[in-house]
Length: 107
Image 1 (tube, rainbow, N blue to C red):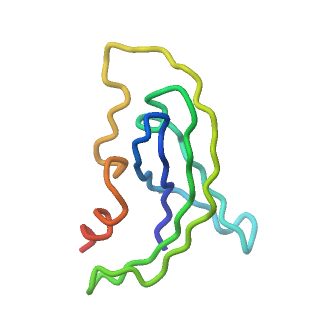
Image 2 (tube, one colour):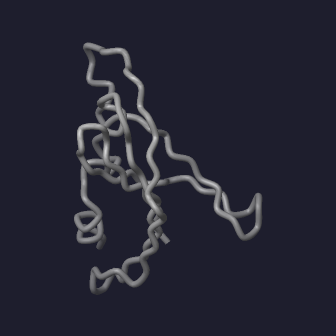
């Protein structure tokens, strides 16, 4: 099962962020995971709306065989410190792709 956070930042831009680490053994029957909120999600002060999606893809047909999305919630992002370096670069983390783009790229 794949696990991602789907979010809309304070600028109204939509992204997904993969959950790469999860714990299914500490509390049997539960999944513990974290989302390091940064980069695109925190690029502007204001509300960020997010939901968790669990999904599975049939790699032969590139189609969804399972998809479950939680109800969206909203959190507040406060202002940050501007830097001269591009510390918010998230290349390679899939944060710049829509869910259908991620699914279509699975081999």
